[in-house]
Length: 67
Image 1 (cartoon, rainbow, N blue to C red):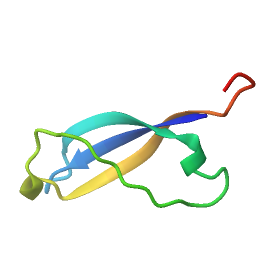
Image 2 (image 1 turned 90 degrees about the vertical axis):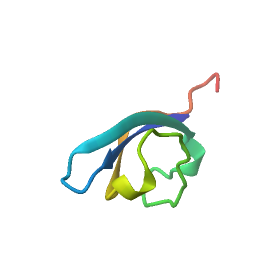
Image 3 (image 1 turned 180 degrees about the vertical axis):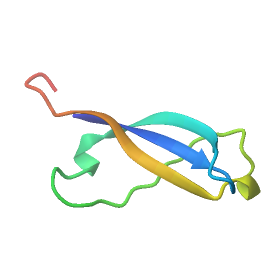
């Protein structure tokens, strides 16, 4: 299966500095419960500008018959 995550990087005033979608293997995310994972991406935002990151599921597709 495949899960796509939306990542919003927020600045000190709560404004979105950068936003991107990243795919990950659904096997890493259990259907029920939580899982730790690391997101690695290049961004034009400088480290000092980023106050926090919000991560949400953009879309998810379970493993099909042909996967």
